[in-house]
Length: 111
Image: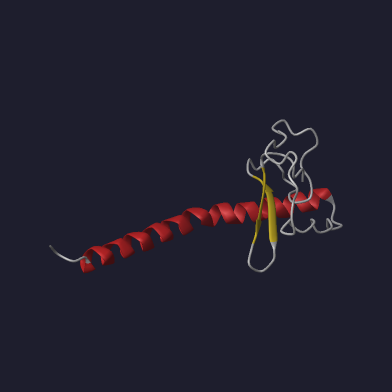
């Protein structure tokens, strides 16, 4: 991935795993590479001239030796699974928040 692109993001989790991705979802082979000649590539200007300390992200692991077509299919399948369950997960979270809101109103002090 082109880490100097302003649409590139990465997150490091407590386990040490690093997620690297395009926020526009234009890199189907993330985290290993962006499409050649990406029409939305824009160089990130905020990093110009900065010196990075010891908290710099670890390098990207080696790309698996899998045919590109097969890798794309696996990534598409994973995206479909996430998209299929996302609406259900959001509905569960909203119901949980709503339930928590009701409890807070019940225990609120009266004036």
